[in-house]
Amino acid sequence: MVHFKATAGFVEQFGKMRVRNTPLCESAILGAGLGLSINGCKSIIEMQFSDFVTCGFNQIVNNLAKTHYRWGQAADVVVRMPTGAGVGAGPFHSQSTEAWFFHVPGLKIVYLPFPEDANGLMASAIQDPNPVMYFEHKALYRSITANIPDDYYTTEIGKANLIRKGDDLTIVTYGLGVHWAMEILDQHPEISADLIDLSTLLPWDEETVLKSVKKTRKYW
Image 1: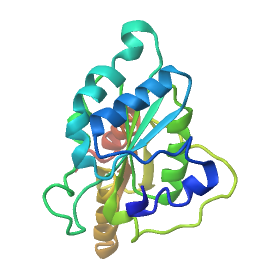
Image 2: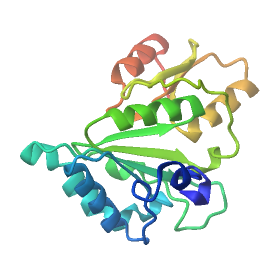
Image 3: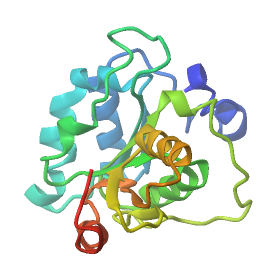
Image 4: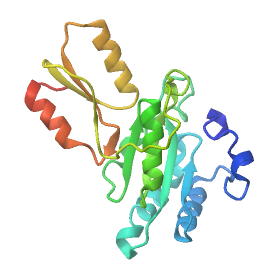
């Protein structure tokens, strides 16, 4: 999406047959993505703002999520969405929409706090033969930078990251919340905490979280 420069230069590099600029009609865009998948293409859909996913909710919940279960056809689609508040974008461009999909069988949900994970999880999402909802908090686009490997690599979907180790309590969060927690822990060095970044919200890494909670006996 050129608005956030995430796909700037794609048309010049890959051509208009692979990179298509569409009208703002989310239901049609998602339907086209599924249709391309059925015809053997890998579809990566990028919505301008995750708020507009409401217009394509039926396509995601009743088509993408259920196609493989109903007739064995892979819905080979990644739905990439800038999400979240904190950038002064107003009521229709600042919602956090990931929770709307937590209880939809057939979907995977990833939400990234760091550039290296964003790159690795995107590669894993592209490899996955079924639908992946890929969320990125807009406030992190221009505030967090990092050097990432030039070589191709993937980050495992469904695996949480233990960002910091401690014994007082367990903090479980994701996305921008990881950076909030790191800031608080930096301000209060007397707090010894396990900080867990889920990274994948569906399926979530229950094993890592339970292991930490059993150790600290407290969670937040």
